[in-house]
Image (cartoon, rainbow, N blue to C red; front, side, top):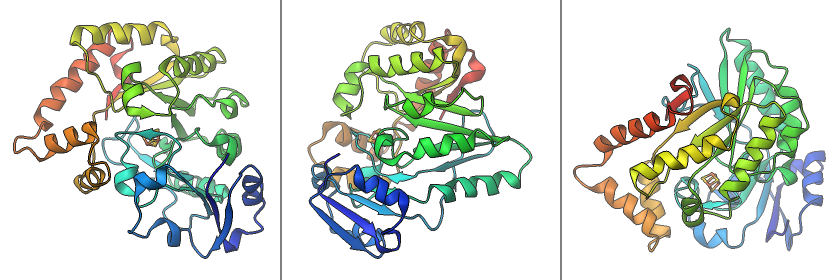
Length: 326
Ligand code: SF4
């Protein structure tokens, strides 16, 4: 993989995993820093400009490795957490909140994978019920797997955790790390889907719908239960055609091997959205979202019936108890 600069925290200069990752990269300069925050956090950066020439920062995550998930974020369990072994993503979705949240588009890879696992184990040790952990909140779980090897490390360990459920959310079709292990009921590979026209217009550089469906089928054939995520679901067509779209999706996967389906709408903290408009002043999708957010009579009230309609359509194919509106 070709990048502009490789930044590396000085305390991990000799870290085995950092060295392994470094070997897979082609970069112009190697720059040593004290903390990734020196490069990542300064405000005088432009996410959009950096997106055209990204660098990688190798770092360790010291605090807040595993965080409580927002209340509505659930696939049926009462207690939910999220974590990200990376910040930022090689894809470039119009609706991605990361461009509103971070000052920098550089990819930060936290190489202390063991600490993520130990933190999860620690949370589980204090609980008797099942707890869900979502991977890939501030990144895509699988997109950079060939470089990071995170899932390769993590899945073998997580599979042993009795009351932990792991969701691996991704748009990537890089499923090699999942195929290496036996299907397990506590690991849910989950793929985000949208109509192909939405993928083309709004999910730049991501795999086509057909390729994501192929990845789902391949894993289902191996015995995996798969999560299907329409989140955010971007639909411009007629409502009646939406049923056809879902028919196509659910006829091309094994319905009995669908773990859960989530439906979500575009949602974003206002300050992130404001920043996204600032750095994307001509992006019609972001402008449209911004305008609808600042209108006095916000669209909030119209969202629930819309989501309920979508749920009703999906429930023709998947049991309603498996469908979650997030
Ligand atoms: S795949 Fe997810 S993390 Fe990556 S750009 Fe798209 S929305 Fe953001």
